[in-house]
Image (cartoon, rainbow, N blue to C red):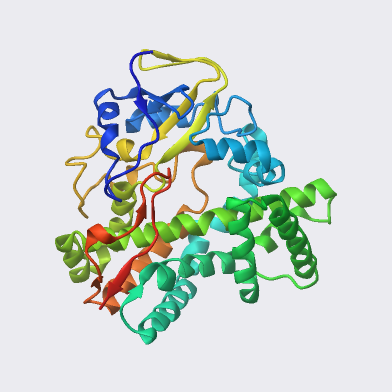
Length: 402
């Protein structure tokens, strides 16, 4: 192994790759990075190599493997201290491999099919309009995140899943506690108890949410392990989906406000919005990447990835591969390759909720642009606070006026 680059590194601009990753782009398609503990792992930086490896069964998503690479000491500490129950949720889908993963994913696919998501457009529009009405009624300036981009995907996803409106705040609180601790195990127990009650209610009075779909496929009550598996799968979808979509909407609006020509083009031609959403997904690359672990030696691009080597797919570099995208560092609505990004992953673990995320982004951003033509930042762009060190880019506050 040659000299490596420290990984991960924070961005200095929310929608640009970390400047320190330039040497990795220069070493394409594979480079080396060093984690906080000195461990050296592989970084994938080009689209074609990423797609080839992401479908290779020798790269595992099993986070319970002792060799799994940890990006931060805080993550390693969480896994060793409090994650025994929480890891059940993670491994329910994204941390499973092979037939186990395929069986669980197959159960969920119909619930997130594009036809079903498109049928939800009027309901999503209703959620967006109602939330924007509240924000406008409360007057400018406003924090676009707390007033709009955070609650919209929460409400949309919870309703799709079948979580009653009156329980959204409770579920959100426990989901956040589950993700951030220190009382994650207690939150897990509360969520399991709550979902048990909700399942019993849905068995008596079926609805039309994803929970109802899963119960119908599950058939009879099943054993305790089956019940916990079902709940873990559902909680993972609910707890993990809305945060990403909310971030994409807020970061997408921030990016549009920094690119007035592209924003004006969208206002003049709203039919460009579906393509614009995918171009924003490519350009923003939220989250920063995907982690895998090699379970066997893999020969790729003249290099050998050894068994138990960590492999990181760095989305901001993959999504700006100059062999795939002309002028990859520019934002534009007329790319034929806009949808070739890997922001939703690729292969067996490609994000199940991508259609819902796209439609929610399209409606939320389109409605903001249409109803608030004078929307602008209430402070200088340099004053917008964001988290530059997480592998998941987050704007923490977005003050706007109109």
